[in-house]
Image (cartoon, rainbow, N blue to C red; front, side, top):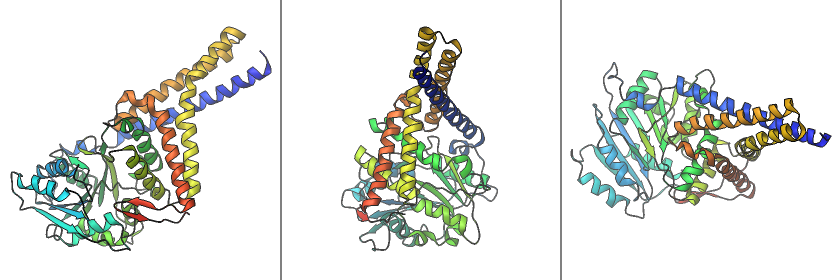
Length: 415
């Protein structure tokens, strides 16, 4: 066999082996997470906490959420929480029918509206991020939040199984954490939610692996603003939302404050496992802009970090899995055309094993996200598109392009 074909064969062998090793690690990490970490669904069967059920106030910011607010509000009003439960919606400069849709649902609530408050916000100060100011206004401007033992901050595009809050409180006490956050189960109705969204979520979890986030010895802190359940004393101790007033990802800032505060507080992050659902974006354009913001802030606005993540994702998420079958095919060619049994068999082996580990490993990851398993075949394309979002986020920072979010624009300096 000519030397250049031998060289190509060894390059193919190295790539196939790299794919097998990488997705073998992905598979092992996913199995470990499933084996060692409970999910919120496990909390549904937990008993009453030793001290009884604490009072809970749910504070939900909403900016032009007329399409989501009805289903979200219905799910909160139907909670079976055994203790005192209050709900506060903080409507932030809404210009659509969010208020009307919300009142329609409240008026039809079977238990009336005695435990419900609506705080309307007409103005956001320049030195506050919109969502953060809305939640802060809901906390300080409502009776329900004033004396609550626990504060739950949730987004208006989430909805809950009837036992969700009960399960979250029981799980928080069982794990003895001051902040319990959830990775909500995302919907998979739109094509981009099936083809691109799982890759986007996995890229964020790669930066904040759940096993490390939940290990107090690792010191890696993360939270998801879609669902954050605080013990009141911990929330007050770190300064509440005023301490993160200008943050575009207040959840990450909260997690860091919980770590660095004089009296360190514990954080736990679990999978919702279908008990709390979320539809993050309605269109791919919203998806692209939203994830640019998430990646920008989670990378601390570091351009090099964003670019490095993008190129790594293109290699590991797109190139390596797509090469597994060509590697095996090249091996058959070496075996049949050149008669080199050891090299041909090695190529076929690493190609087939790499393909198996990719499909099985990513199958576990997709199952954890409640994404269709058959959608794994779209992962290489989704990973490439997510890498483009990362590169676009880096370019926006370099060019000083403002971040548009929640009805405002924010200019962030590149680091």
